[in-house]
Amino acid sequence: DAGVIQSPRHEVTEMGQEVTLRCKPISGHNSLFWYRQTMMRGLELLIYFNNNVPIDDSGMPEDRFSAKMPNASFSTLKIQPSEPRDSAVYFCASRARAGDSNQPQHFGDGTRLSIL
Amino acid sequence: GQSLEQPSEVTAVEGAIVQINCTYQTSGFYGLSWYQQHDGGAPTFLSYNGLDGLEETGRFSSFLSRSDSYGYLLLQELQMKDSASYFCAVRDNSWGKFQFGAGTQVVVTP
Image (tube, rainbow over all chains, first blue to last red; front, top):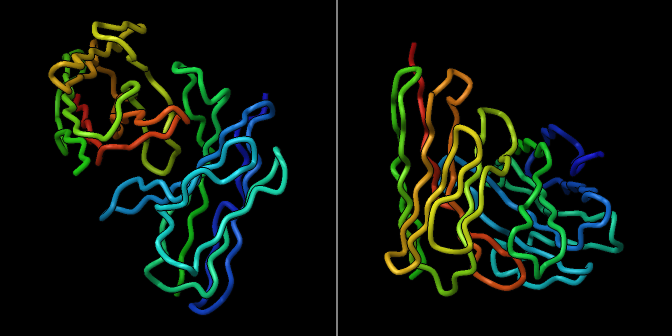
């Protein structure tokens, strides 16, 4: 079975540009999570969705960040305008059945984002 | 405030046993998970403890004491491939949201 698929794997762009990260969760999973990982701050939860509905976006750093989940098989995380401090690895994870305690989160391979 | 505390680094030789402790203080608690992450890779799930006690999965075991807000991951018969970062993560709400610790880097030497 295919795991969580993220694209692009690497992105290098100049500050001020719009960046869009994409995620396809595992089929049948109904929870989706976006994380950011840096050496300084570790693994931070940005936002998560359940059944395509955003549940908690309190981790989104500022208004430059936005996320959508238009359907069960696709989500985007957008940064506009991007800044050098946004450079990080961004992970998407999905999970089956929100109420099932034992279900783990499955992570994609991440997008390594560098803002110059 | 909410926090998860785990050691930053542990070094051990091949064949040894390593215990990584995790203490937590969170607004809610539904369970404790452990994830492994190799350099440049994605976190991968190792274990989950929803109730007190020991869970064993091959060479890895995980323990939870909810009354002490404490858990640990035990790595036995260490192999070179076990060199990685290990994260404890608390599920703190019914939606399956997890808070991750800062991670423990395990270095296995020959």
